Structure formats: C-alpha cells, structure tokens
Length: 169
Image 1 (cartoon, rainbow, N blue to C red):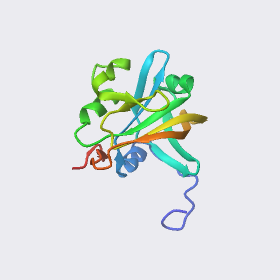
Image 2: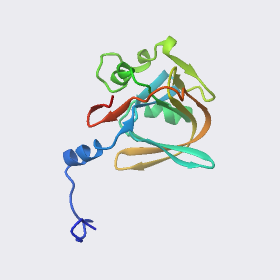
Image 3: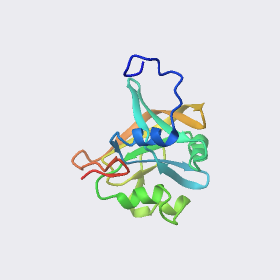
Image 4: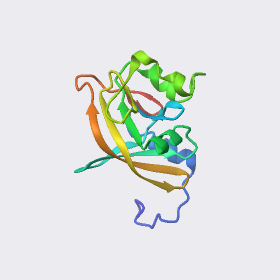
C-alpha cells in the first residue's frame, strides 16, 4: 500500500530514483572474494547480509556480469570482508576506480586465508568465510547463499561505512 492508502503494486520505479533511495541506507564497505582457477577475484559487495544463525548462513547479491562470479561458482566458496576505516583505497581497487584489475588487486601483505581458501583482508573488522550452498538468479542478479565455516576479525576496529555515495566519519 502507498502512504496514501492506494495500491503501489503497479507503479514503475525509475532506476535513478531507486539507487538514490538505496543510497539512504548506511552499509559496511564490504569486499567479497573467492579464489578461482585464474587466482584471487573479488568485488565491492554492497548487498551482503545474514540469512540465519542456525546454521550460520550469509547471502550476497552479485551482478551476473561481475567477473568474480565465475570464481565463486567454480570454487564453491566466498568470503565477505567488512573493511575498517582507512581502507578507502581497497574499496577503490574493487569498485573499478583504478587501472588495477583481477588478481593484481591482491597485494600479498594485505591478504590471508581462512578455511575455504578465499582471500581474507588482513585487518578486517569481520570476515565470514563461506562454502557456497546455492545460487538463485533473479533479473540479472545472482543471490549466493553460503554456509559460514570460519569467522575472523578485529572487533575493536571501526567500520568503514558507505552512505549517500561517500563515507561516514
């Protein structure tokens, strides 16, 4: 129902207005990673959330055109890395704002591994290392469900929070 009590089911939403509304939510800056046959792969994951705690399950939304999707499907794993403040350069690497692409984004001193072999950012405030359970395709987006098999992080670090196209202090 609309705010005026009318049915809103058949209203077309402009994509620009949709993204502007989505930008109103504050989200952790998140890098989703996997290790495929061509090496490490990853992307900026602005839609990563828990599904349930028993069993521990996470969900990541992935554009079907994202190059890292192949690594996730082939390796059957992914890691969700919640970044700390001061790592805007890492976000830039994975959001296409630099000329550095593919495995070259994974500087050895900044990345490690947990149980699955997916790259894990050293210094993350939280990491969920997942085995891929299922993928669901909707409207050019892949919903990846993963069973959490390892966790890590620095609970004393402050998160890098993305809001309205920028970062909160």
